[in-house]
Image (tube, rainbow, N blue to C red):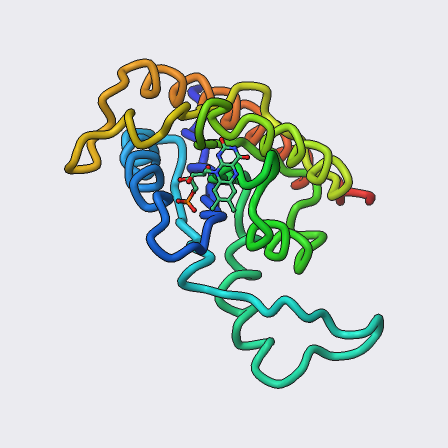
Length: 199
Ligand SMILES: Cc1cc2nc3c(=O)[nH]c(=O)nc-3n(C[C@H](O)[C@H](O)[C@H](O)COP(=O)(O)O)c2cc1C
């Protein structure tokens, strides 16, 4: 008797930069193309520029101000439904953008017991300093971070004028990243289905 194929893992791709004129859509379009090639993963791109969240938090125990729930409704259920995440981050001053931290901080249990992978870009460092800081943040949120990354050093030189990636090594790196994300995604989805995560 053969085992039925597993339901594809739902992967929320969180686009961290909200800067005007940002490079993020180029990287995200490439990433979405890589994701589309996977039968085992189903992507949902959550672009924080299209779903902005307030930067003022309510007091502990208080409801958010009017309008906030509607803004959160465009993001929070999609993070809750995800089995795994990819955070797309540039490097800003040796770290990740405030817009990404804000979206992370608005949520808590949505991250619990789930794997998080990183695709980064920037200048010389390829955004890797942002990634290393994000690992610390995600550990606090009971998430597991994936070892392999895709990082674009001098990102603007890795894509042509049409936004096509000119570095074949990036496709290879994306496959390795997705393979690891899928392993952890399945392992943790199976675990959560039999035992509630205890934070
Ligand atoms: C405020 C700010 C700070 C930056 N700091 C760094 C940095 O520390 N290291 C780096 O490699 N690139 C840095 N950059 C360059 C960005 O990584 C690069 O411009 C990238 O395209 C930004 O992503 P975005 O265009 O999607 O917003 C910085 C850019 C900005 C806007």
